[in-house]
Image 1: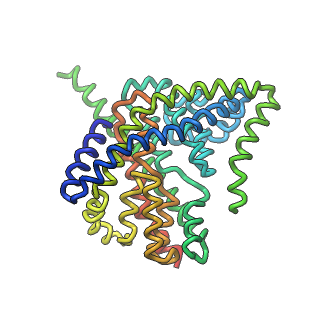
Image 2: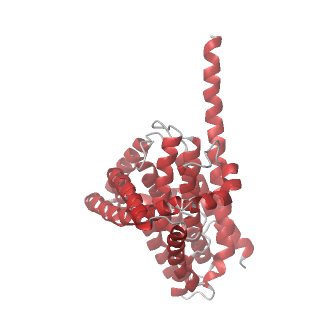
Image 3: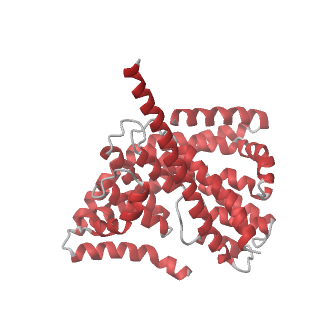
Length: 205
Length: 173
């Protein structure tokens, strides 16, 4: 999948750059983006180590166990056969907490940790498992309780009530998340069905 | 409300450390242990991060964004989505900083309290940078086949765009 996305994006950009006459910009982007990626890495790695350290403290003091207990009902609803005492679930709980508080920089390292743990616990073997997909959707459509960035830019541009978008943001986030989760779970069900069918067919033939 | 958000991170960190202290955890030693683990994870991500950020950067520069926006226009017009917000909807899944830049340009051309201005604000507040998140999360694992992760994530984004226009139309008059 990543092979396809990467190849399509590169080829599309090259072709598009030629058509729109922006080849110079595309070549600049190719040269500079890899440097940007390293800058982003430096930015991320500090946060990852900091939050990874704090996560370890929270784990050792069994704080994550408490948090996990609060999220258990919701987790049972969207995850399937997830070890609710495992490391992955603890990381997921902290990641969701950080996301809801709008702490994006904290959520990313915790999310990475959760993904790694899910991969090990579920023997992913190079293919994303159902729970990994559900978790990735949970993060790409994460719910932020306070839209502070949008609000501060709105007030900068002279909005009379910068926070008035709040109810719309919450409703839209919840609907978007639900749509993503439903899609993730149904598509998994469909691929599971076709998989089982092909398995059943073989002994008949 | 803004004061409260400033307090969030310090309280979050303070609480974890205090809780650890009360439960007789060697806070510093455990912190170092966790940081060490994540350092090696981070180095593992770097190559795929470079690959994806480069592809995203080239895509942004090529003008492909505008082309996709033009292609989608008939569909979004039909759904009652303001055309001013189209570049934002196309940029949003690809780049967080890019989306912020597009949002700024939208607010410079329309008032933040206009229909398009409000819809743009709701989009920015309620959706996430899908491609970046998937690249970073799956980049940390050995997963080659992400199956329907991208399709499902983009479904969420698309629902977010449609409902940002709908909720603004219904709730804010």
